Image (cartoon, rainbow, N blue to C red; front, side, top):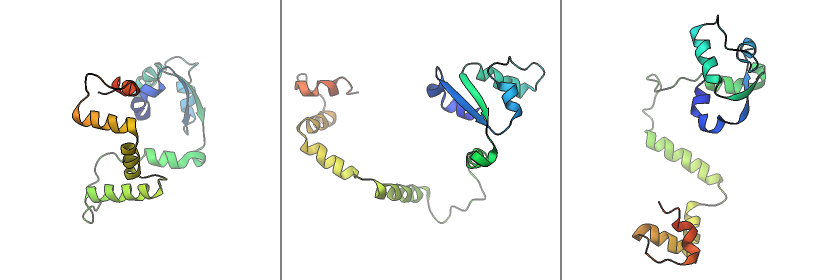
Length: 148
C-alpha cells in the first residue's frame, strides 16, 4: 500500500500489474472481485484504496523476487543501534556521490564549461542570474516561457 500511495501520480489512470508472493491476496483483491465483506478491517481499507486503480494482480514465488521482498521489510526511520560514529551523514553522502560520479561519462564541470561556451545557453545563464530583460533574442523565447 505504501508503494501505491508513493507513486499514485504515476499509477492513477494507467493499467499496471501488482505482483505478490501471497497467493490468497489474488482472490481477495482480484479486480473482478467485489470488496470482501467478511474480511478484516485492514483488508477492507486496502480493497477500498485499490478500487481507485486499474490493475491486474498476479502471483510470483518469493524465490523469484525475494530481494524486493527483503527490501520492503527494512525498517523505516532511524535505527538507534546502528553505529554512525565513524562517519557523519554528510561524509556518507559525499562518498556516495563521488562513487557514482566516477562512473558518469560526463562531469558537471564539463557541462558548465560547455554551457558558457554556447551562445544561447550562456545568455540564459546570465538572465537567470541577473534577471530577464524586457526584450530578449528570439532563440531565448522557449526558455523565457519556463523561466520561473
